[in-house]
Length: 353
Image (cartoon, rainbow, N blue to C red; front, side):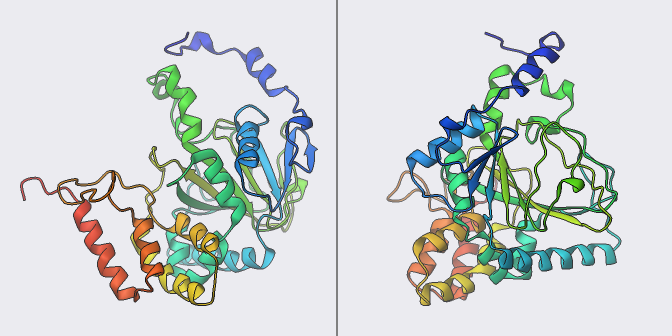
C-alpha cells in the first residue's frame, strides 16, 4: 500500500488507461442517454436510495460526470442571469477585474462569492433558483446532510481561451510540492468532500468549447455535476457572439472546509420573508427545505460548547434548524434576526473574556 506519493508514481500510461475506460450503460438504468461516455439524465429524477446509489456509482466508479437535461427552468435561469449581469456591471464600474484560477485574469468575467451576493440582491430569485430537487438530490447523494453550497459565476467571452485542464479543490488548488505533503489516503478522501457542478445560463454550442477529449453542448438550464478529481477545464469560446455564462457550484461536505466564506446569517435574514410567504401560500416542506439547505449552515460545528450547549440533543442547534423553526412557528423576521445574532454570539470563543 502506498502511503506517500512521489514523482516516481506518475505514469502517463496508467492515466491514459483510466481515461480510456468505457461506460457501460447497463449499469445506469435511470440514464436516458450516453454521449462520449458521459451519462445523460432527465432534469427530474425520483428521489430514493436506488437513484442516489446510481449517481454515486457514476461519480465514483463510472465516468465521473453526469449531465441533467433541463434541470433548471429557463425562466428561473434568466431571472438569475439578470442578477449576475448586474453584479458583473457593478464590478466593472468599480474597476474590479475577476481573476481566474486556471485562465488569464480579465479575459473573462467572474463573480466570486456569488451565493450570498445573489441572495441579498434578489432573495425571491435566489429562492426560486435553489428550490431545485435535482441539485438537492445529487448533493445529498454525494455529500449527505448539512452540505454547504458556494457559487462562482464564470462568463467565457467570445475569444476567451481555454483553462488549463485541472482537477478541483482541494488538491487541485495546490502545487505539486504542496500536494505531496499529504498522504495517499488523503488524496483518496479529498474527492468525496466536495461536489462540483455547473448550470448553463445560456445555450452552449460546441463551437464555444475547446477541442478536448470529451465535449458536450449544453442548453440553458442544463446542469453538469462531476467528481472534483475529474480533469476538466472551461474551453475556448470560438463563437463571435455567445457570452458563455455558467453558475459554477462547489458544494462542500459538512466535514470539510469550503473554498469560499459565505455569510449564511445574512442569507437567512434575506430569504426568510420569501420562505415565510411561501409557507403561507402552501409551499411544501421539500421546496422550503431545498432553499434552506442552500441558504443556511447545516452543521453545528465548530462552536463554543461552553455557551452553545447541546441541551436535549447530542449537538447544538444548527442555523438551518433555527431557520426552519422560525418558519414552522411563523416568526416575524425581526425575531429570527435576534435569534440568529444570539446564536452567532454563543458560537464565538470567549477565552480570557
